[in-house]
Amino acid sequence: MPPAPETVKVDFIAPRHLAGGGDPAWITVPLHRACGWSHGSDPLMPRVLLSSPDQKALLHLEPEPDGQWWTLRHAAEPDRPAWCASFGARTPVELIAAVTDALTDPAPASSPPPDPYGPLRQIGWSNVYGGSSLVSPDDTAYLQRLGNAEEPGAWFVTAALGLNRPVWQARFGEHTPPRLVAAFTTALADPAPVPRTGGLRNLPTRDPDVVTRQSRDVRAVHIASALDERVRSLAARRTTPPTKPSPHDRLRRP
Image (tube, rainbow, N blue to C red; front, side):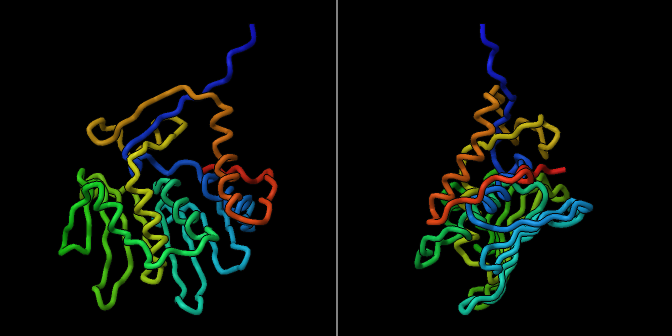
């Protein structure tokens, strides 16, 4: 009798903003292999740098116990000043990947740009502070934009388990293209659970009244192929072939 296929226990977590950070490779590998971003790292420091082919964008991943782990910077362009976005350690990689996927999409941007508030209002997020901020129905996530209609400012998206229990925060500078903020809020609004391996130690809470967890045994080959499928899908948007995998593609959070 042939041996049973190897399986891995996978937890499917909802809402996704309380699922923990996940595997950074979900972001870094497609940027390198499908989008042509070059990567560099310091063997003596736990950090990774990825730069776009045109050298206008830089993604910096570095563990910062008291700050943001992910920082995305973009140089000024003729129609837009330089901008920056950053994400806390426990920001789900699926949400950050939505931003990098939108940034690297070669298709023309829609006009007018999408409304970042729209996806969240559609799933029942309510207005607070005169409509410049939204809060999720369970009070565990918030969207806020500083400034006013004449001088709009930075965007902040925060996940928290109470007033003094922040989980993560995403920050988008005032000049960040709205389509990238909308990509983030669209991914945030997605009700589909996200997969996590490695047990429950990385969950910000195990409270069944707050998060829903369904565990399943999944064939290891299917887990391994999910990233490859993502790379192929993103590479299909481009006319140039994707970069071949390198031994350094698998980047795990410490």
